[in-house]
Image (cartoon, rainbow, N blue to C red; front, side, top):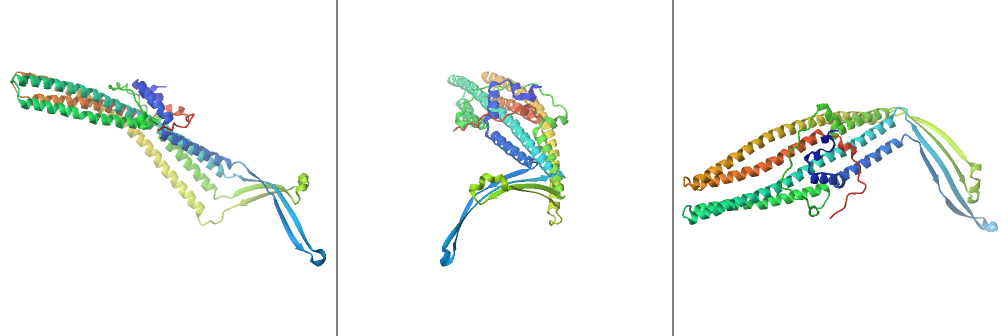
Length: 435
């Protein structure tokens, strides 16, 4: 299998990202809720299947009573004590002539399978969210490194401006302008640090940690963009996208419930049996089989008039099928849209990044020329200042664009789906209760 189909995040060759995704797939609490919903759906499927079997019940009890009687002057008052010990075993079974129960069972099983697909869809979204949060965090590290470099450049320019001012070759205005430029660069640092903490908190939430418990490794360089994965045919999304598979399963489940609703309007055959024993003396319990009784019964119930309730249920379920069909079609269209959106966004973002690289080169040339003219007394300091600010701005934008390009690739991986979610298993232990 292709790597992107199994574990697409490994194509970024970042061990920290691999570890965070693995932790999220075991400790994330949203995913834990999805596992719990799957358990509920599994239990409902077992409940629906149980109606295919006879229901057997055993009932027993014990009662004791005493009655007082008056026999007049001759007999006086006397009492009678009575004990009652019933033991009954009963069985009831509905013969599924019209497959009503089987249809309900099959619908419940399909709902269970759809719930599993919902879980896999959450896992796919979770992996993408972890990757984007991590890349955003790395972006802030790269911005911090760039700001340190830009501040160093600003201090160098300030020293040169001071030197020229001391030699009478520059004005005090030049010094103040460079100080202002350096202060503006320094002012960006707290904002980057704030965003860095926010993304760290977001990543901690995704992997199931309290915000302060996560201490990610320091990174100041974004990974390279992996080769473009094959997109395949649009029909491939039917098997690769769990949300599409879920919508298809729910459509099938709704269809089975229409069959069950139609069968509910037809005659129902129920058979049963009952056997038991009752004694009024606890000492006679050892002779239980001497007075054993049993009975068999069968009945047919045909709903003749119910005010249209069963027909309305059929119509309701047919409408649910129409709704599910629309949801299935919408899920397929959405999947196609997400793939096309991610492809065009990545392609245009790559073009944008190439233009930014050209801008960086031009901004550096402009700054070099402005410094030369200023050093030769051919211009004032303002062109130098403008060129420096332009270069530093485009350098920061370049890092943002690189991270956005990675984000579009992550969105493409998520839109293409994959088969790696099929191997997901519930955590061996409940998610860690930290904090």
